[in-house]
Length: 204
Image 1 (cartoon, one colour):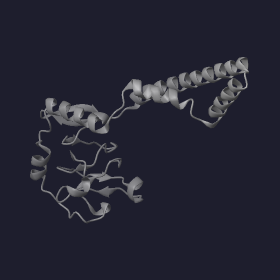
Image 2 (cartoon, one colour):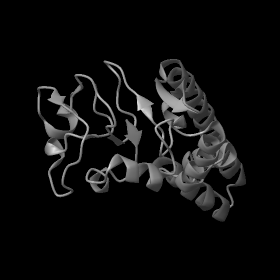
Image 3 (spheres, helix red, strand yellow):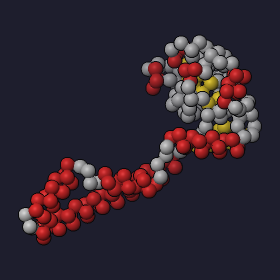
Image 4 (spheres, rainbow, N blue to C red):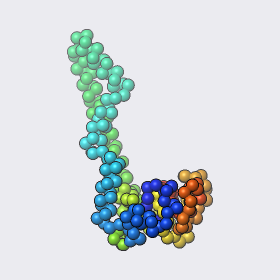
């Protein structure tokens, strides 16, 4: 299977033309080209830095109705000359925000660790050899080798198949597996009739 982004536009194109368009071959991508495409993919996704994510998380602690109400109370206390009350409320506000930030940060770390333990790996061809790659490492133009039970990590065009049946119930509502085969189909056909494509997140 060969990965592509616009599955609606590459179902009718011959496989040989897809190789040219995606600048790859039946041997897959080279390791160097895969790294370059992965970097470009990250740029297009505009992945935030860890510092920016944490700053947004910290600021989010102070933007909810209860916190805003406490801010108003601090301003009123300062305006009325009740400096001790203003400092006390401000202290409570800061402690509450920092504790919330710390709890969410730890929860995020635990979630990231959990994701790493259950991260799926897929077999792709790199320099003509099968290599295990995590879902986030798959790029446009990769040639995938799928086995029974795999979740499709990207929109794919089928190059070769052997008794390939795919569960598309989450996308089409069809409860029975659909048989998929190589070949070409018209662009205007509905998803269920594109026998040469595998939609993302369906399951073999």
